[in-house]
Image (tube, rainbow, N blue to C red; front, side, top):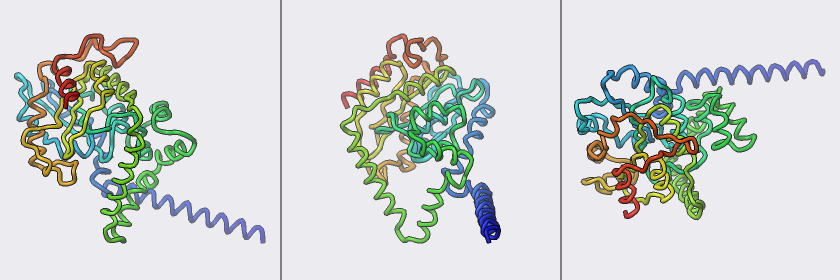
Length: 343
């Protein structure tokens, strides 16, 4: 009797194991069809490779890094046509995973572009509101599967993973496409089964985000990871540009962020108020229409200090603070910070 029971247990375990294996293989086969964003995440290596291989030796390589605001807001063709660079062409690329912030961009740049062969000449980080503040990633499973490798463990434990449960979930997602994309599968299924599910979830997510913002409003924001990000870019000679992007409701820039700009001497371009862009050009309050994207891209290209951006990023680091520049901020940076403070 006991032998039969043990045999039945093994059969159940085998069926479960085979089912999980089939599910994992099936998920990997259709992974890129889950959403445009998953397809983009899977293409990170190709984007980095193309920036290295497709740019001519005399072209200035510019990488746009951000989220869906960058995906819908940056028109690369308009940007290149509008940039006034003396006798030098521009080659651009975009890395813009949805619903992300610096917590994800930090690893995206570090693992795909922090290399002498793949590093861009100029890195334009598009943000709004609190995208650059110190916050743990809201998608540790996606970090595990798409962004990170074993070398990131120390940063992950410092910034994003807290406790055994987070660590266990991370390593499971590291090897399982089915586990890392379980939320996307759930949304797709429920969206098909429940009328109005997606709209309802957007309302719930907005309320949760608003509650989280209220809870953190009284806390002074910090920017430790941004400083590390700047230091990592500078080690590879990358000029970092922070671009404050427009949205329907104007936001203020944290004084602590302006302190980082002042300390490091990086460029901050204030594009919160672009001529010709009106609130109605943001159908959902955040993402631009094609017309607004064209105007933003043209404006961004016109306000960048191209002559300085073509200079090599060297002699900017100190041993005391690898992200801190020994000299004072440039005039353009000081003007942008002053405008942001007065705005």
